[in-house]
Amino acid sequence: DVKVTQSSRYLVKRTGEKVFLECVQDMDHENMFWYRQDPGLGLRLIYFSYDVKMKEKGDIPEGYSVSREKKERFSLILESASTNQTSMYLCASSFNKGWDEKLFFGSGTQLSVL
Amino acid sequence: GDSVTQMEGPVTLSEEAFLTINCTYTATGYPSLFWYVQYPGEGLQLLLKATKADDKGSNKGFEATYRKETTSFHLEKGSVQVSDSAVYFCALTGNQFYFGTGTSLTVIP
Image (tube, rainbow over all chains, first blue to last red; front, side):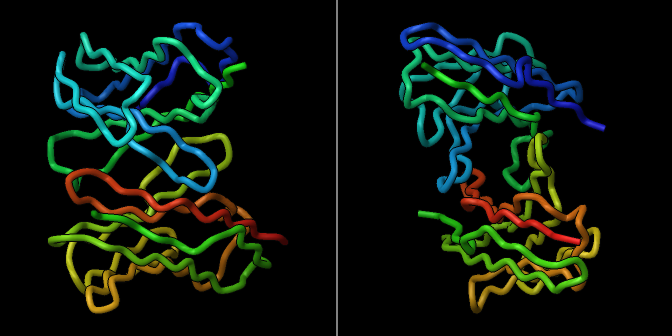
């Protein structure tokens, strides 16, 4: 089975800190995604990547950046964390560029910014 | 733009009750439709999908039919179990995945 692993289940950071969320997938998937999940808002796409060193903005990229130096790893970076970035962050991957492809999700990182 | 609207939760049912979770969509073109499920402490996983009008997706006793005339993709199960307690997300693909807000289901013995 495909495994998408997120490095931390829970994370507590201070306002203004630089935060790195790491995601690794083990099935050679082309596409990787970062979503945030908030009650009443569902999942919102932050960034996605079709290939190494490529990135595309999603619906809510402000305050975030990403890095994909290797195919299996996709990092989400909060340059200067703010309290409104407290959320559950979900990483996902899929096999090819078609948007009909099934998404495989990690278990999520619950980030609290104090 | 493309969007998905699903019924508000939470939903609480007794074991063996019938389940319906409503989902309607707005889309240009001909999207594929999905139901994802999120069990406590886990990420989302695909439950079922349908790629064209009148297709029925099914898995683990759950079913949903792609209705173009009513722009709906309602999730149904004839007899729920305690193990079905989870959050259910309706989704569609346009130029990206669009997810509904999620419906929390609790099944009590």
